Length: 253
Image (cartoon, rainbow, N blue to C red; front, side, top):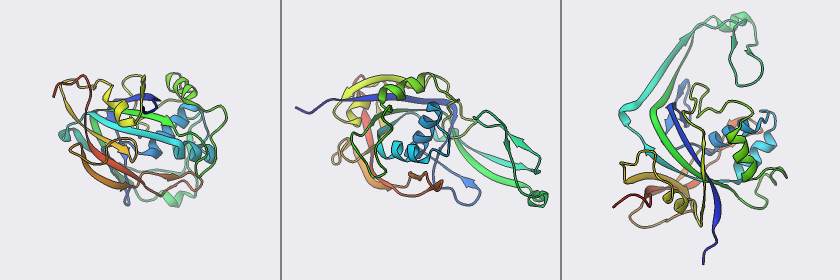
């Protein structure tokens, strides 16, 4: 008999979400599924960690095991925000920390307008089944007091505001949805009713070993570049995932 594991079920639902992909120049794209680096940053923010705590971030990312399911999506709701602004060295920006973010450098740095594009999904809902891998992973052991219980407590009462990809993407409801017990992430998601209960067959993404790898539910197996080197602050590295479909148990075939 396969061993049951405990999973935290998160629901990422908001007027706007952005699951960033590989940015090219000034264009910030969004993927269909949230990245491991995004979930790491979101949880670390809820825990109140500082960005300089790169060892904690790295260990958390390396221990995260999760699968994602798209409960509600509409390609017509994808939008691009085109930003054009003239910045000066004296301008300050809002942050999720305790003080405004200031800019550095000489005034001549900001003679040209600041332009960029950012993609978003409107009215999306994604459900995630998440746990922490046991034992030591490449970057080292987790903090002694870090557990699913401490993650759940932080997500219910975050020390800083939670946002879904970008600071403008505030969740429409508490991120922590429920607990589940299942052998794999895929099976945990199958137990959770979808946010849009009218849908039966849902798109899903899960790591190797956490769901089927062959059969009708599997669309493809890919190396997904969604990891961050938290020491340098740069994205780099990939993980092997399965993209496919899933029925939640309450849905009729």
